[in-house]
Image (tube, rainbow, N blue to C red):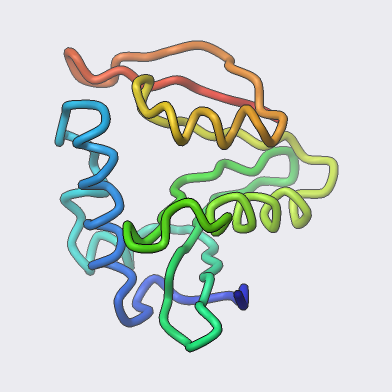
Length: 145
């Protein structure tokens, strides 16, 4: 696997994002996850840094995006192609952002019922910081490291 900086216009990224968030929507039983409905223009407008994970053969199989300040890194999204789950891609991408964050605090949020994502973050040392209901019935949990 090769990890490198990418742009939000990277070929296949939006389609992979929609497919990945469709899996999360199925897991949590709610399709009101904003990245599931973003357009390419929406994605291009976000002020995020991006890394992509590429298979040895070349195709994009995962991506992570974050916003940052001098004190904090906010993991905005972690995307793994549904056909590449359980290969350590998400873990590798998060670990790369953690390494780049240095001593800064890192925060991330995920669906409260997204057990695989929660296990990933907790396994990497993130601790729950509380829950929120951004829209009625859609619960998320906040983590920090």
